[in-house]
Length: 301
Image 1 (cartoon, rainbow, N blue to C red):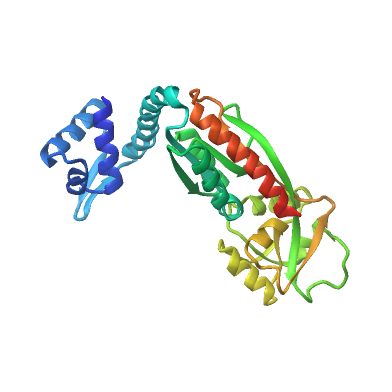
Image 2 (cartoon, rainbow, N blue to C red):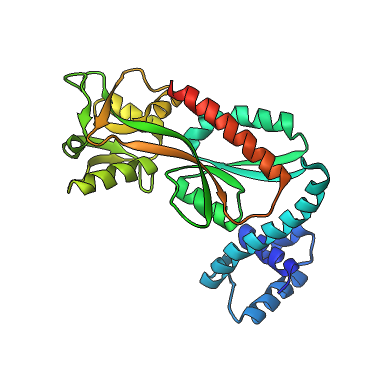
């Protein structure tokens, strides 16, 4: 097995076709097929299966694909690190953000990175916290902002801010301005995000401690639609004030603090615990941390 074979296999798998990969790589298709076949022989596993539209990745191929991406990224980083040792500002950095965080900081982050690291190639990727964790560990991204990151020896976690979660309903949904006990959520019609959304996991976990579960009438991911349904009286939802403001959805909605206990969403900056020293990544991490602290705290005000 060599790096070239892995690169060929990844490109064929991602493009789903030997012919498309051949054109992309500028490698003759017979030579490309031979290299992938040699890889299959060495691993004693079928990695790709041809079909009428191109190729499909087998179960063994999926396992290799995940590992191969990480290996290729590590090799790429090695070359970057040698160059980075000279300047500290060139190379690539990939940052993962939840979509609701991206709304608050992405534009300012890109501007700051461009100002301070003008020679760097920056990639921003959106995903749920569970996806971001997987991408961190596989090497697809170098750092990420996550909600309630799991304690793990493979992750280095830095606290940013804690955000209280609120019960949100239509303007006339609440009889009084008092906080709402958490256990009351079990009897309210809830419009909530699909699992494994971090807010939903917190709500379900805390209710489960009380032997309760939420009464979910709609589950969907688009936040705008969720807030629209709540505004129209179809039920209630749970979100932070920053999320509500970031979507410009506050009009026509009322909020009440949740107590007994309060629900708190921890926003954290996460890196792989095992990583190469990289001056570019260290600089990008500092920029991301400082800017996130400033903008996320301002968003809560």
